[in-house]
Image (cartoon, rainbow, N blue to C red):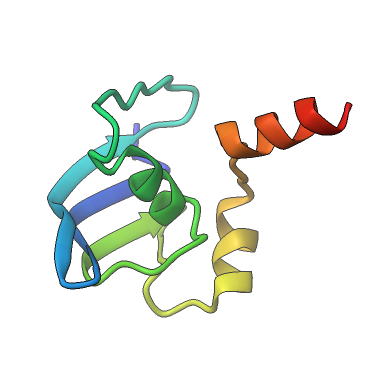
Amino acid sequence: MEPVIQVRDVTKIYDGRKVLDGICLDVRQGETLVILGGSGSGKSTLLRLMIGNISYDGGDIVGFGRSLAAMTPAARKAQTGTGMATRELNSCRTALS
């Protein structure tokens, strides 16, 4: 089965610091994937890249057969059809409840 998301040699740099360096992975339809690591290891950054919320500095991410690199942020979101709830969002909901 062909992957629905392919991450190939992806690099992300924040303030001159490489947070992701050459990441590769495939996600197939119906597959469950766990990304595990310590605080500041790039987990949330990788997820934000994969769903198209932020741009990457090197490599490529292909979602459903199309490279996300050449798409606008709105087109990337529409292409992946995904979103992300972070613990900060959950904290805000709890505080406002």
